[in-house]
Image (tube, rainbow, N blue to C red; front, side):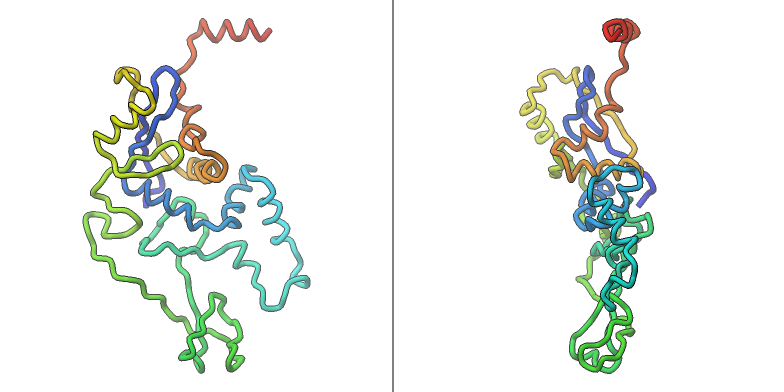
Length: 245
């Protein structure tokens, strides 16, 4: 996945209000990848920019807790830096997972008892049968996906379609009919009143989308609305300044 994605937004010219987004495969794959981000990892990302509440302090509490207070078998790194697996994702499946999170879920078994079906995500865990350390890496084989198109079958959705992303992150295949239906539902009568705006989605926007998705049902407007508002005229700005004084 590219370091930055693009998203086409249909907005109201006069206010910058976002009606919906038109997205390609890579952005939709990113949105769906939010579903596998553990809350602890989300807290780690968002706490860097003071964007989250008590989960950030909870994360810090575990991070700072002395080892003497932890159970011997407990590896706090498993919660602080969890291994995140997105099926059939290929490399760089999500903007948010490029910050040090592993997207490869490794499993380990015991060399003596690996036929009993016991596996662990934590290398060195004691085998419940023979009590030896489980250090033999085993592999979880998923269903084979045939390559299709330039995306090679990776990710969540097919790249042959364009997708409509609503303000509340409802994602559906896009068509001319569906676009008209949405505009009618939103009481947009004049085509001249709307325009297309293309925005870039990098790490900052990805974090903002993650945060908004946990808090709001107007995600696109929360993240991009302020940037899309038309600039105030000098006259209006002067009036507001005089009124404030």
